[in-house]
Length: 281
Image 1 (cartoon, helix red, strand yellow):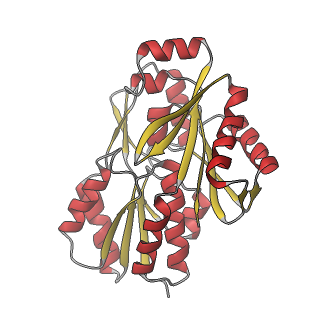
Image 2: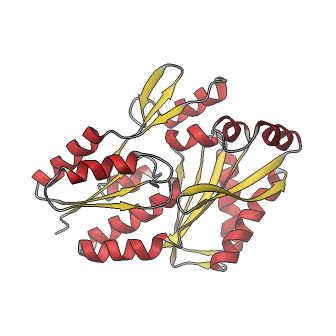
């Protein structure tokens, strides 16, 4: 019997059906937008948030999960006799992981925290690996050892349809964003040691997907049948369909999961985000 409860936060993007299948508890961050606070995925849907981003000139802010939210969650499952494993979105990108550690330090019981040093579909891959192992009856030590092994090679590559949100959030300068948008320059970004970093720039949307696939091939080769692959987008489903089609044509794949990226990530990337994550299963 599986006695390990997997907990994560909403910095990780995981398909809803898999959250339900593996009974993963997602502790939500909050989004502050136009003087209102929304609990991610509860007070506002992804679709509503995308539209608000499109309609507003203001930039939303995200608020980390509180100590008390984690403490309440951890206590609940420990009282049920569970071993709890919390897998956090990168500690370099949010104070959420530190809130979890503080709650852990004030809690007695079989409670473990793990810093994925990734975000969105990347940390989602890692959470799913843990959930699968827990269901298979693996021990907590086996799971933690495996997560340490796979996180260093977990790859997340993504792009955005405009540099506006990255500029507003301080990721790129106003001059760079203005020139980039005028010249239709599309950035290709990745998660490096838990933080967003630039990987490449290409001219025009048509070149982006080809470059992303090229970068995946450079790291993993063209056979990903034994890898976990998740693709994700905001409100640009058409772009995701093209990416999914092209990776199917150019790579040997097992099952590919897809997800619409959550509010906490899109608050910084904008709704036109498109990406792929690959990790060992």
